[in-house]
Length: 341
Ligand code: AKB
Image 1 (cartoon, rainbow, N blue to C red):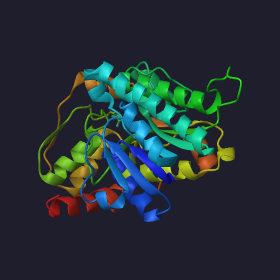
Image 2 (image 1 turned 120 degrees about the horizontal axis):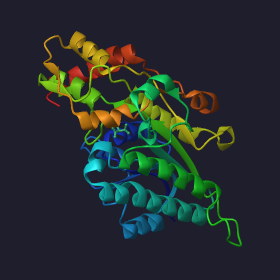
Image 3 (image 1 turned 90 degrees about the vertical axis):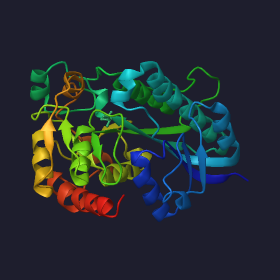
């Protein structure tokens, strides 16, 4: 007999860390993880099986299909925006072909055990592309269907995969004799920049905020690569993890969309710097403008309209900017580096 499990791809990344802890504490489903990199040692005891491998390896996905009844997938594996600009075809392979493999895997799981597979997909504000700073200022909080003209490979990948997910959920093989759609219950959130106190991101363009905070806590100098007035939305990692869990648990009948914005706070880089300096007065933070990465961040909205997520599945972040710093980031980061982490 195959065992019912939740599958997490990209589990060794930033979101995976908090998600595994929360799912393990909940204890309802055994956890199977898939990542190129091994899990952090403290996470290993929390999962039933850790698979080291690629989402591009369809033989490995077949093996998982033959051993497990997967009815929930968190597909976190991706190459982020900055890294994707250096290797766009690899980004396309991982972000698009990898997602297609997972959607096909979910379809086959659903067909074999007869229940829809809930497929949770973290998309991104990178799916937006605002043409210039005047439009960005005028647009304010953008809604899901506005400015869907991303300028990055990563943003294009995310936007297309949102559509692929919707296709699998609603129109898969629509000309086949038997109806086959509905086996994949695809649900996506468009995340803003995520800030974790326990992990440092790599390869993203919203990384300037977490990098500033972690460098200050470690007593290292940091030159922020965007202008002080740069503004994009951010969220504390525990709220990001909670959003994924809440969306996964929402009844399908309550959902009016397949893709939802989620926001929390939208500080300028200067406001972040001020809060970091309040917590670490000696921090050596400067500005080291990178015009090209600035261009990417300038194409992302200042904030997102997340009223659909709030109305449909009760999204309500716990942390605003000040609480994120005072109750989560600063105390957790201090503890982490004090213990040599
Ligand atoms: C990135 O910077 O690429 C990500 C994102 C905004 O999706 N953090």
